[in-house]
Amino acid sequence: MTENSTTKATMEKIVSLCKRRGFIFQSSEIYGGLGSCWDYGPLGVELKRNVKEAWWRFMIRERDDVVGLDTAILMHPQVWVASGHVQGFTDPLVECKACHLRWRADALQGIKCPSCGGELTEPRMFNLMFKTFMGPVEDAASVVYLRPETAQGIFVNFENVMMSQRRKLPFGIAQIGKTFRNEITPGNFIFRTREFEQMEMEFFVKPGTDEQWFTYWVEQRLSWYKGLGIRKENLRLRPHGRDELAHYARCCSDVEYLFPMGWSELEGIANRGDFDLTQHSKVSGKRLEYFDDETNEHYIPYVIEPSAGVDRSLLAFLIDAYDEEPDKEGTRVILHLHRDLAPVKVAILPLSRKEEVSGVARKIHSSLRPCFMTQYDDTQSIGRRYRRQDEIGTPFCVTVDFQSLEDHAVTIRERDSMKQIRVPIADLKQVVLAKLAGEPFEGQTATAGEGASKA
Ligand code: ATP
Image 1 (cartoon, rainbow, N blue to C red):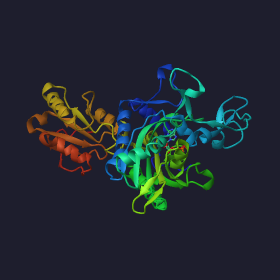
Image 2: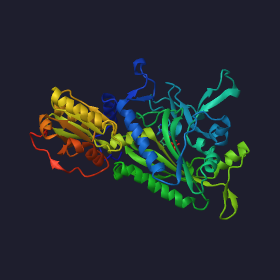
Image 3: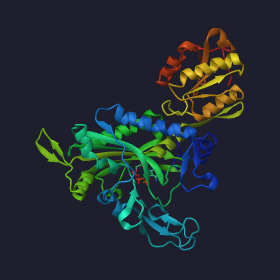
Image 4: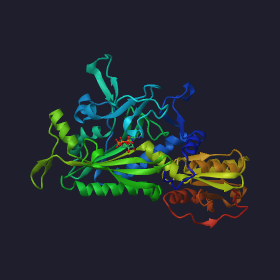
């Protein structure tokens, strides 16, 4: 296996950090857990929101040609007939005749059970959609599915969005939401689960321009990951071979990340052609076309789809950010998370619990917390508190000391360089906002006696 350039980040260390610091817990842990289901703790939920927010800003808010949507998880069952999921959203399942464990045949290396070496059954196709019943009657007529992708909610609203927003091609519709797949072999922590979140965008274009838009979106999506700190040597693009293409795709490339278990898909970018709108037109009987008033033609647009997993991206961001450095207490664990992703932006750390100091620190805390996520911590030594914040990826710590009572200034310490600068309390909010926006960490260097705490 090729090594991730962050070789210090094993999956065990990431899982342990996530539990210890309150990022991610096993679901229903007190009952022994539920396989492949995970709960996001107080820091995990902040990180997850930040990942989604970064995607939303990049894909929608900073552009003129993409709008957002939020559709229901439960949809008319005919949607999944039209999309091909009822018929074809399957994986080949084999079962061990000895230990009865089930496996995905196409993911196995050999022809024996990987657990006990037993003989396997012939593969049968297993549909990955979760079924449930709508209303009080549990019969075939009331079957509905938990959506296995968010994309179909976008296709069935194509006309609603286009008409209400007076959109012309090319334009995109994006959404983020929960998705469910009854995976045969989930695993690798939050990499493959049965309930997860997707961030998907369908970009509708004039047929003939699809290839150039495909290339454009591949580049955009790679730049999104790099812009949020993923090292370029841990990212690669893998075009699908003809035999691997999904039933709807004209071409597809996966953005892959070098996870601790090897290169694996982070995001799929597909040229879906006119497959989905054509299918929904046929099955619903409603024409889903675009009228091009420049050429006076009606046609069905082609679609380019970048489809990313929230949880998988979050895992990649954590792995890429993880670092360990030797220090005098043993090891300093640091998450070099991008400022936009860090769950806590600023920690306020008074160097004394005496009222004069803590009163000032609390006032500072109150003034900062409406602007960004903060944490107030006055327990244990300052060194320990810095370590705790480094381990959760907090970019800046603000220390308040006795000197602050005289010079009305505080010390800001930056996570990665551990550099410290002294800033007037009156300017603190503006300074932190500027640093969070990416301004270089420069200013009056704090000296000992001005809260420059050794750590
Ligand atoms: P895989 O080959 O890993 O099963 P896929 O090709 O079926 O994935 P897509 O249908 O292209 O996946 O889904 C788009 C994205 O959704 C994936 O790139 C991934 O980030 C995320 N995703 C898909 N399945 C899961 C899952 N079971 N758990 C977590 N994330 C998932």
